[in-house]
Image (cartoon, rainbow, N blue to C red; front, side):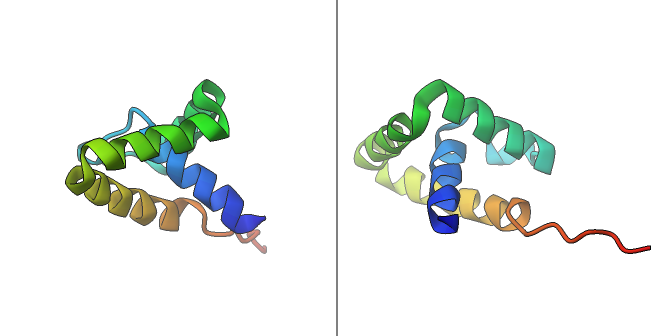
Length: 83
């Protein structure tokens, strides 16, 4: 289940409006993922990724590398703060 969620998040971020040059915050990444999933749905996100890899494979590989770097920071389990 977790890998499916991570895969969907990766696809959504990949096809989102965010650009690596924006150095987006964690909140911006989370919002972009949500907005993109609501816009395209899970199948639509996967289809858009496939199109980009077919049309622009060199750029798509670079973008997916960025996506996974961003998700490594966003999808870290949040630990409760103990006082």
